[in-house]
Length: 295
Length: 291
Image 1 (spheres, rainbow over the protein chains, first blue to last red):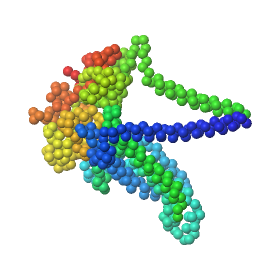
Image 2: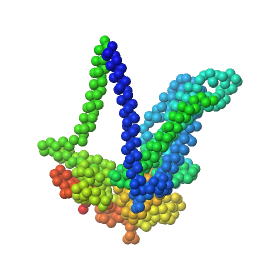
Image 3: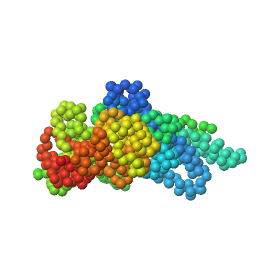
Image 4: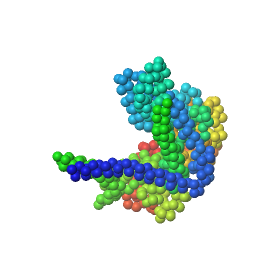
């Protein structure tokens, strides 16, 4: 008897410890990231960092302008979302509402496999296949553009969007759907007037998480977007090289002298990225909670 | 019964813990410098340009002297010099000369960096083979890289926009090219930045309007090197003969830095690299021996 209690307590404390480690790791990560990032603003004005349009980290004097990098991340992410959301939601609707159970059972794992492909493989594919294709199709000077990055990221965000949307659509109560059909709606009317609106919270959360995945992706983007630190126009910027925040950190950390302004600037970019994805995740979980079956 | 189960659980737990502990102990062991009676060990760290050369040299050296151990780590010139300043490594590799700020840091730490030129590397300016341009002056090259020239027609080519390609700022080659060709001015903002030399080669082989610069060792049939004219003296081709003779304008020394004059294994290794055997290895890796 005593043994059992002892075991229960032991397991409980073990699980608590695991959870605590995750929270602690996040907390320490925040501290280190922000501490080194904030050191930049001791000798470089924060207003300059947020509004300057030049990123010349090794020039004299140095320019650490976040704007081209932030907008670069933004345009690639927006492009990825435009590409993957319609596709992902359509696929999710097909899998959960229309497909034969056998087909659905085959399709779901296949989309999950997309998530298991290493990002460097996506990047390599993009560089060798997609980049020349984009260049030849659109007749532009180079195929390394924001669009190329968007397409790759869109493909990479698909599994997240499909699986979470599919769960949301599947969890819409049958009574609602059957009620709609009983009132004489066709299958399609039911899907776009009833099922999808009812699952909208889950679908929005899926999109948000897809955005989070796209913003944080590094390797693939670095390989296919060309990495020019210029302010992208919209939508013309889609067809020109851009540089994202993640690619900047990955590109420049190799040679950055420890403790220099440039080093702290990279940490500051990391902090901005962290805050951005953090906000996106908070919005995603809020949306998911707030709009449950809000018909 | 319950006690038996508990025993089983405890034993499973302890096995898992043991494995984790062993892993940590293993990690701890990797960094230990094991000094046996007659063998020493040193660490060489720094430039990715010098990395293949150091790897080849150290492998041959260890085959000849199996009692010694040499660890070679990449990461970039700045990383290697920073490690030397922190006293973590015996030799730093650099594809650029040490900066004044780095020397100050070193002296503040009681480290005296000493420079050794171990080899020469030629930088080739390369274009797509379909591009009719075969030679370029430094003036035009600077124009292309600082943004004042954006069409091949302006430098004797076809009417085609120029796609300018550079390495990222963590590359020693980036800094060297900026000094020699751009005269320390900034690269154009809209230049494509590639994370590795292989990516530059790939883009140029696929893109008829592209121009980039790479280490001589990376030249292949899919790209063609331009002849360069630095000072109006005439165009010089990027050939091994011209690089060794010193007439090719974009040839740079590759360095090792040690703390003070090298002693012990570091000295032995450095002597080996500078010996005829070591200099032959340099040629076989695609760099050029020191005359």
